[in-house]
Length: 66
Image (tube, rainbow, N blue to C red; front, side, top):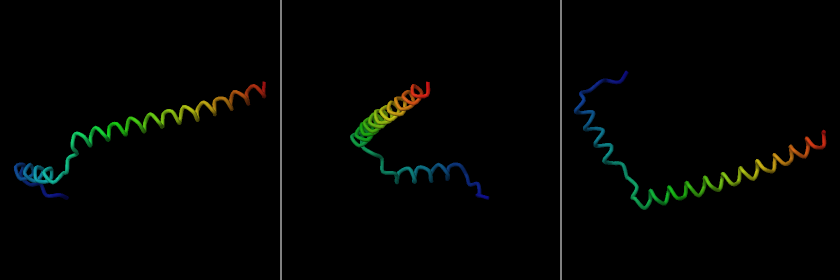
């Protein structure tokens, strides 16, 4: 089981670890957000197309069975 230390020491360790983090710049954050929007849009269009094709196939098969 982990040993419980005092709170000021814990806060100091958290601050020390947070200082080691390399934070992205505003430009990097914006570029990443734009790429996420583009990729989700492309995937949405792709899955819409696949769904439309499968829907047409199912409708065709149901028309043949009727």
